Length: 207
Length: 384
Image (tube, rainbow over all chains, first blue to last red; front, side, top):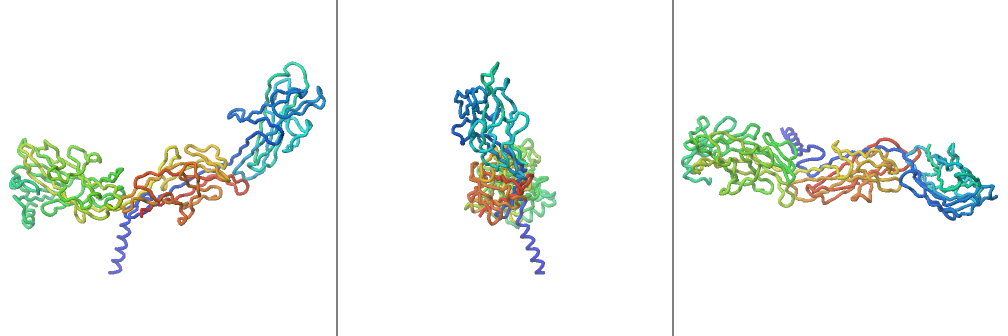
């Protein structure tokens, strides 16, 4: 009989502490609701450009917040290398025959996350070329390095047909210095002067 | 009794009916309990005739049950209650949680009969014996002119016999039955005056012939059977969406979805902001903690949280907590023993804005993770 009474008493004690849900309770001083947090992780890539710091002078890389993403202006240029331009220049080795190069350093800042591999490339391609008669064309440092070019010979035309690889396997978040410029040919004729622009598209691929 | 003896000598006092059985008492002046029992036994089979009107109080359909009490009174109870309105109320009782307590209400019926045409009867009430813990339990009444299903229809019953609360308003009713409301308001009540346990109260109803302004009957309702009204302490902690934050939805118990996230903080979803962090980024949202508690000596509570079920990829996703949107964001403990204390001064019904951060690592390579994951935070509020 005593045993039965004990069981009954315990049963009543359990009933007297009522908990209605995880958020509420009576006849006690504590309550413990839960919060489930969900998220879906996606991989991400980012490639930003910024003004260089390696050369003697630098043409500014200016974000527009729209399209195109950035702009860089070399200022007033000529095929004889008379104008100073906005940053650096290599005068033609043979005036009237070879090209003048106006150039600047710039920085590429690749960042990528949640990628299963870290191998990557950055390419550059002229996606909108200067207008005819094409006495201007975009050039890059042939070495694809952060070493400041020493002469006009250190530059190569940026392809308009297929992307040129300019960075390979950069660490995420690392700054890559490269050099870009415009070559001015000594061509004469209609339409060789005046303001002109071209667009270079850089592509970061992590695979 | 505070009814005039002149009236009492000529009337039935009180007449009550419960569960189909009729109990009645008639006397001219205060009688001994023995006499009351004798009269009650008689009126079980034969209701007393009324010369100048009779008031019969009885249970209403769906209301609390009454039993015959001492002195011809009715006894009943609202059962166990708490200021947060938690749990299922007693049979016949409806609970309405309010912003400052809970209203436990019921309905009962008053029948006026025996009044000569065109006389009408009005009824008033006062608490003749109040709860001994009047800050924990407050008697309220709803008049016959209301539907008595909403808290706004109820008001505190007067403690003053000279200024009673209207139950059936003047000019009153002719011989008929009306339904009225009776309630116990259990206010939030923390601190030195807090109370848990049983308490009792008694209400006197007085019927008045509004034609001649004579009181013709009284009745008493006692909330004391079998043990009186019982107040329990109660705790509640809910989470809610903060203005401008991600939606906190009811789940088991609550859920929040940060949606698509990445280690660079691109494109945070609606309600999310990103905060720079070493090795990744923190997606942050404000949310609300809404503590409520009553009948405790303490006026403040402690709220802690810990990750009771972690992400499957705990190096990629980490839950963090901050008191401000800009941080600093600190990792939330992953065991009950290392729970992160959010506050130790949580006040009753005082909303707390807090910031939940989800750190997303920018890790690449073999340990990188893409896909869905989830974790669970357990919040614990303790009122000391």
